[in-house]
Image (cartoon, rainbow, N blue to C red; front, side):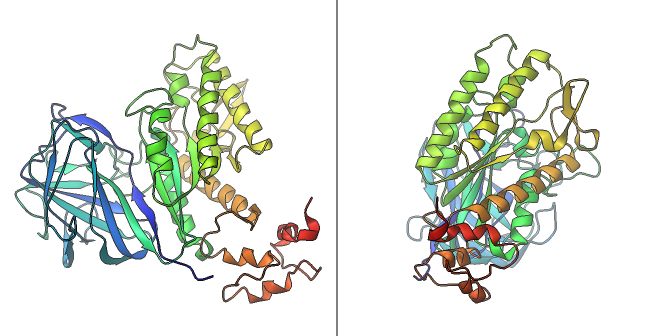
Length: 456
C-alpha cells in the first residue's frame, strides 16, 4: 500500500493569556513581531495556525512572512528565503475574531528536521488580552511598522524589543510524505517547558535548546528509523492538574493533546505543582490527581494515542516541601507504576528514580542534576531527555505490528505479519524472519512474538 501525504504537527506551543496591562506584555499594534521556532519534522509544505483564544476583540494580521534566520539570537534573516503567508485562498491579511483561530494557506517551503524558521507578523489592532506562550526560551524581536520582509526587524537591542515569548502563533504543521508520520506530545509544567534553560546564567542563553524535550527531539532526528516522528512541547510553567498558570491541565488536555495534528503518542509529566503548592493537609489530593490521570489516559487511548506516563520528580529542598507532600508524591508515582504493569499505559518513564537519590529516607534530585530542589539543571534535563528516548525506542520496538501506528523507518516491522506487506529497501533480509522458524537477526529477537504461532 502506497503512503499518502498527511499533515503532522512539527512545532506547537501551549497558549495562555497575558493582559496588555502586564509590564511584560509588548505593544504589538502597528508593529512587526519576529519570532523564532525550530521544527522537529521536515517536509515540503507548511501551514501556520494563529490563535486569539483569550482575546476579547479581534486581532488583525496585516501581513506575515517566513524566512531562514542567519544569526543566532538576532533578528537577521536571509531575505532571499523570505516568503509571504496568505490566508483564505490568497489574501495577505486576516482578522481573527475573539476566541477563534485562523490557519494560513499551505505554502511550499521545504524544511528539514531541526531547521529554524523566523516568522514575522505585522499586526494591526490587537485585543486587550493577548494569547501567548510566555516562555519560548527563544529571542523574538519587535519593530514599529511593517518590517516582515526586512533583513533586520528590531529598533534597538533592549528589553522592549527583544522578547522571549511567542504571541498568537500556536501551531506549525508540515505535509509529511508518509501516512505513518505521527507527533509525540510532551504534556507538562515548567519541567517540560524548560525552566532555567536560558538567562540569567551567563553560559545559558535563549535559543540554546536545552530542555529535555529538545534533547529527546535531537536524538530522534538523529535516528533515521524514526524520521517520521515529530516532537511537540506542550509544557506550561506553573501549570497543574487543577490550576496554576494557564488553563488547568485537566481542562487544556483536549486542546493540547487530542486536537493536535497527527498526535500518535503522549508523554506526560504533570502534578508536582498540585502537591507542592497545596496545604499538604488534604489526604484526598493524590486520589483526585489519580482520577484525572485516569481520565487523560482513557481519552488518549480512545483516540489511538499511545501513552507514556512520567513519574513526578522529587521536590525535597524546595520551598513548601513537607514529608506529607512527599508521601503524596510517592502514592501518585506508585499508581503510575502500577498503571504500566497493568497495561493501562504503553510505558513508564521513571524520571523520579532516574535523576533522584534517596538518603535518610529523603528523596531528592541528585546534586549533579539539580538546580533548585524542584527543577533540574542542564545536566538533569539532558539525563531526562536521554531516558525518554531510551524508553520510547524500547516501547516502539515492542509494539505489535498489528493495528498500531508505525513511524517511517519502522515499516519493516510490518513484514513480520504473514500477510506480505511491503518491506523497505535495506530490510529485505528480514523477510526471512517468517513465522516458520528461520533465524531472526540480533536485536530483533522480541519480534518472534509477531508470528501467529507464538500468540498466547
